[in-house]
Length: 120
Image (cartoon, rainbow, N blue to C red; front, side):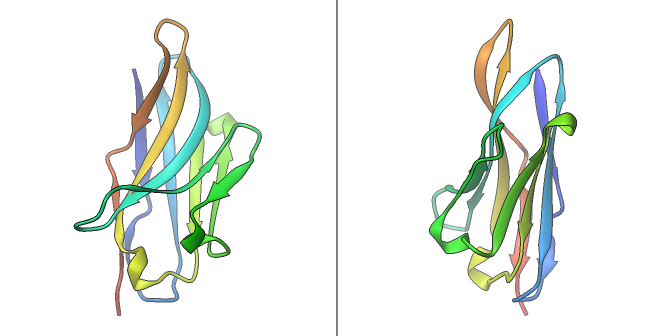
C-alpha cells in the first residue's frame, strides 16, 4: 500500500507564494504520473498540473506562468510552487499519483488534501 502525504498549504495574501509538497511512501513501487488537483467550495475537482517521470508538465490555463510543478524521483516527491496567488486559487489541493506496484498493477492514489486560502 502506498500513501501520499501533502504539506505546505496555508493562508497567504493575494500576490503571495506557497509551495506544496507531496511525498509517496510505502512498499516497492514506481511512480508514473504525479499531479495536483484542487477543489473550491461548491465546485468540481479540477486538474491544476501534472508531470510525468521525464519531467514533462502540463498546466491548467489559469495557472500557466504562475505555478510550477516539479518532482524529485529519488525522493518520490512532487512539488507545486505557486506564485502570484489570486483569491480564486483558494481551494483544497490534492496530490494524485499513478503508481505501479508489481503485485497490484497500476492504481491512482490521492493525498488527504491541503487547504490553500488566498485572502487579504
